[in-house]
Length: 111
Length: 112
Image (tube, rainbow over the protein chains, first blue to last red):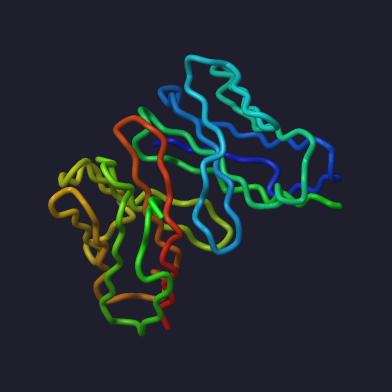
């Protein structure tokens, strides 16, 4: 089955700087890659996703890049703000059926 | 609120007891998923439904676990003879076929 690895497990950045989180996946058939943000005591919230027919997608301060050949994808957050502090999860799936999640990155924005 | 809702939000039970959780998906979403999340880990897939049909079950879903989605609307997840290892957050998500999954707030289960 699919296996997703996520790095780093913790990340601290100064407010206003950029944050990058990286994930690799094992199943070359996977074609859908969402990113979720989870705050304490809440369910995961979808923040951006990308499908295998595109290499990059951007939504305001958030962008995701996908390298199908290398089987890795990354989340980029620019101009970080205190409310960006949370745990971020990457995931992979075939056809947006069951999602296989990474182990999460705890992002802390330092004011 | 038109999001995914789950009930109860918290459940404390004694080992050996049965528990049942409910999930109400976003209206008209035809897919409903159950995941389990333990502390410090990402959610793990348990099972999913398309309408009322249960299409896939993870090997994590032992015979003590059963899920239903009668009439293709809300879903229930039952755990029989709970064990301490069942303590986790149980998350429900819903989607249209091949579209984004939206998660509910989860049910936190503690087995004493």
